[in-house]
Amino acid sequence: MSHLLQPSMRLQLHLRRDLHSLSRTFIFSSPLSPPHSPCAIALRRKMSANSSPLIHSITLPSQLAHPVQIVAAPGISDAEFRSAIESSLFKQWLKNAQSETGIFSGGELSLERVVIQGVDMFGKRIGFLKFKADIFDKETGQKVPGIVFARGPAAAVLILLDSEDETYAVLTEQVRVPVGRFILELPAGMLDDDKGDFVGTAVREVEEEIGLNLKVEDMIDLTALLEPSTGCRVFPSPGGCDEELSLFLYRGRVDRGIITQLQGKETGLRDHGELIKVRVVPYEKLWYMTADAKVLAAIGLYEMGKKQGLLPPQKA
Image (cartoon, rainbow, N blue to C red):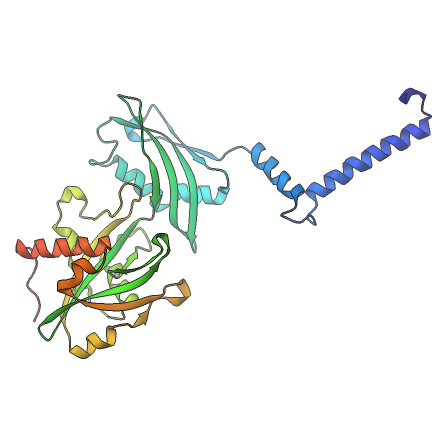
């Protein structure tokens, strides 16, 4: 029937349709629309579905004919994606995997794709990085489990203080949200950069978490007792996390009053959310007082190193 309408009526009808379309466009794109309104959410979903995934390609020396795609999972911004690829965490993972003892050294495995799934910034640097590596056994074609939580290297210190014919271990009690518990553990911390200053990090963490000023030259590297093929590091959870630990030993003599002062002392960088209490326990009881892997690994290295005569004599 539209051909029977008068020209003025057809013009009014077109105007109403145009205005209706314009009002719908305004509702979806207007900055005044609430960010959580159904219209705004629908628009974001549509944009997300239509946007191309962020993709980067790299070539590994071990598989020159098959470049590896690095892809950003939904929700990862362009800035996060670029930071992840350029981070020391990701580069170190690739370096480890291609080393003489790495998983790609024998040529049995191939890396097809890496999906960047999560990026947590510590200020201007990446603190935690989560990604999934699609790795396949060339012979069987089966995929190898490849979910990675990357946090990088860290250092911890076993502090043993002799006082009045008793040896004490100095620990920290910390809130550990991932396990939902308060944990007794060695003073420890992540390296702030990729310079590999493990002993410097250990000394700094002891000062921040315990309040003791130790000298670098008094630190004994317990992980240096391991076979060189291990990288002289301890891996607490290699099935899911890349964290590698250097464990150090400090032994000293103190007055009984120092032990009393340390017990229950509140420390930590409060502006970083660290809620730490110092706990001092007899060394002979240490092995069953905590399930912290750093403590148990340090005890094992210390006791075996002492038994084998590999530790330097204690200073008077």
